[in-house]
Amino acid sequence: MDRRKARSRDEIFNAFLILLKKKRYSNITVKDIIEEANVGRATFYNHFETKDDLLKSFCQKLFEH
Image 1 (tube, rainbow, N blue to C red):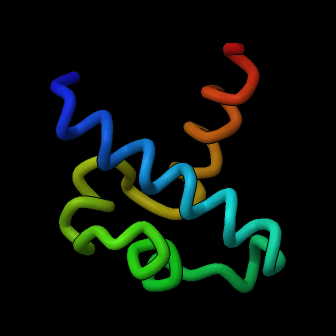
Image 2 (cartoon, rainbow, N blue to C red):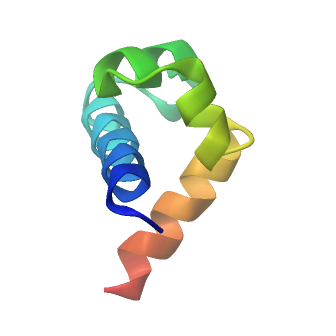
């Protein structure tokens, strides 16, 4: 993965973590995530199909370390 894509993905993960500290998972929307991450909707969907897919990837990344 190139640096730009990796940076976007990390920004989405960081935004997701920030939002999880503020809201319940069920109340977080893709709109919330892209606004917090300051990325476009297309960027989000280039990395993840759904919010659930983001959660799955987030957990995999978390438990890899």
